Length: 438
Ligand SMILES: Cc1ncc(COP(=O)(O)O)c(C=O)c1O
Image 1 (cartoon, helix red, strand yellow):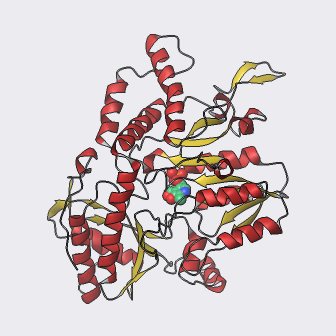
Image 2 (tube, protein in one colour):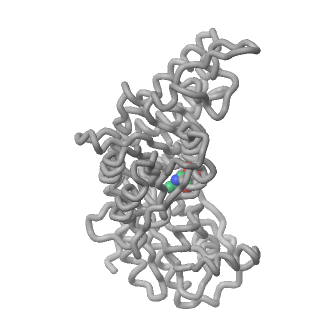
Image 3 (cartoon, helix red, strand yellow):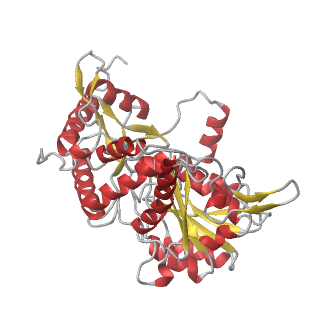
C-alpha cells in the first residue's frame, strides 16, 4: 500500500474539523467523521451567513416592516438560485421548500395520488425507505431489480415499463445509493420512463451534495421531472429540503397540509387557494434554513461540483484499496475504473458484528461511521443474501442481533491521513478481535 498524506484543500471551509473528542482511554484526539451520508457538518460560510442574516431576520410574507420585506424577498429569490443550481426550467418548474427529502417525497406522493391503488409507481430495490414507503399506501408499487452486485438493472426497468402497459405514472429512483454509493444513469432512466409515458423522480439526497445534477440536459427526452434533496446532507443543517417539479403538478388540487400561508381568501363556505408554490408551504416558512441552503449552494458552486466529485472519488479509491488489502474485510460495493460513484463504502469484518466494529472505531480512534441498514432494509437484505424466512425470524424475535453493514461516507473535508488512521485501527481489529473489552 502506497500511503498518501495530503490534507484536503477544502478542510478549512467546514466547521468543527479540528474538534477534539475523548477516546475510551480518556485521551483526546481530533474527531474523524466518516458519516457524511447521514448528515454533513455546516460550512463555515453557512454559519457566517446565518449570523449575518440574523440581524435582518424577520417573519416573512405577512409582515409589513422593512426587515420582513427584506426577508421575504430573500426567501422568494432563493427559489431561482436553487432552480439554477440543478438546471431546472424556471418557466416550467417550481421550487417548494420542505423539511427534507422525506417530506418532499411524501408531498409528491400525495399530489400524484389519484384516489385509488390502480396507478403504478416503479420504485427500485436500492431505494431508501423514504423513496419506498410513501408510495405504498397510495399506489401499486413494483420494484426494479438489482443485479448480483447491487446495481440497478436497466433491462428490468424496461421490462417492467412494458409489463405495466402505460400505467406507470412515475419511476422513483435514487440518484446515488446511500448504501453502495452507485450512481444511477438518471438521464437514461428518464428517457426510458418518458418513452413509456411515465415521469421520473430522482431522489437526490445523496447525489446533489456530491455531483453535478442537470435536470435539463441537451436531449429533451432525458429531462428530470421531479427532484428532491436535503440541505443537511450538503453542509447546511438548518432543517430545509427541496422538491422541484413542474408547476402544473401543483397548480391543481390542494396540498396535504393546509393552513396559514396557503390560502388567499377564506370564508366558512369556500377557499381561494394561493398560487404554487405558496399553497404547498403551510405555516411559517423556515427562512434561516433557506439562508443556509443558499450559502451552501454558493460555496459548493464556487468550489465546483466536479472538483468535489474528483476529490471524493480519489478518497474512495484510496480507502477501497486500503480495505481490500486487509484480510477479513468484505466489501459490498464494486465499481469498475471510471464508473460513477459517490464516496460511500459498505463493508463488514468477518466474525465481528457490525455494531461492534463501529464501537471500536469510535472508542479507539474517534472515528464516526454508521452501521445497520441505513433505512434501506430490502436492499441490505439482498446484498447480504438474507432470506424472507430469516426476516420472519427477526420479526418474531425483536431482540435478536440485526443484520447490517458498516458504512464509510466521505465529504469534501475528509483526507488521506484520516483514512490511514482508519486502516490502522481496522487492521488491529482484524488481527486481534478479542483484545477489546467493550
Ligand atoms: C438516498 C436517500 N434518500 C432519502 C433520504 C432521506 O433524507 P432525509 O432524512 O433528509 O429526509 C436519505 C437519508 O439518508 C437518503 O440517503
